[in-house]
Image 1 (cartoon, protein in one colour):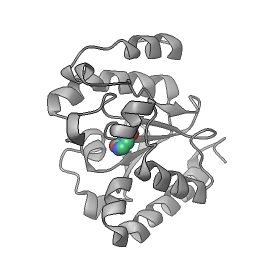
Image 2 (cartoon, helix red, strand yellow):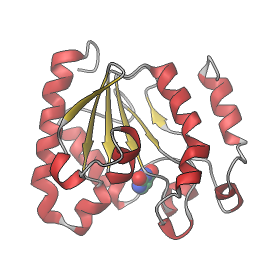
Image 3 (spheres, helix red, strand yellow):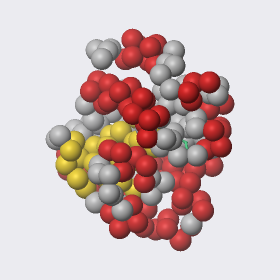
Length: 190
Ligand code: URA
């Protein structure tokens, strides 16, 4: 465990704990305000993220930024964004359980440094991993759970919204609920 961001990031960038290190171009450590009260967590880098070293920079990322901006959130100002795994799984397959196990200590260390009040899981993989293994994303998106004093919610993954635009209004409702929750429990996000 690192007690500072610089040490943590430096060590993470050298990580060779699982075989995803062999095919990555960049470790995608995370982006945003390290003092944020709200943390978004995706599944893992895709092709664009692997090439640029930043989470959610492809088409899904543009949609995410639009939804964030609609509720006055901004990746460069008042939130932080990270992923369950920090290196791209080949062909964008779901990260294997053992890859998630290998990588999650980095994320846990980020959480312990940041001490977020709210964690938003983007998609099924992050929701199942961080909220509960039997999470049904279609039924339970937008529902708040308490995990060790942190308020947690899963919403639909931006890539799923691009595939199924009919689900966008439901996802947007989740963001409105999130805005209300931020107003209720956060001190310096808005
Ligand atoms: N999908 C994710 O889950 N994370 C990213 O960073 C990009 C796409």
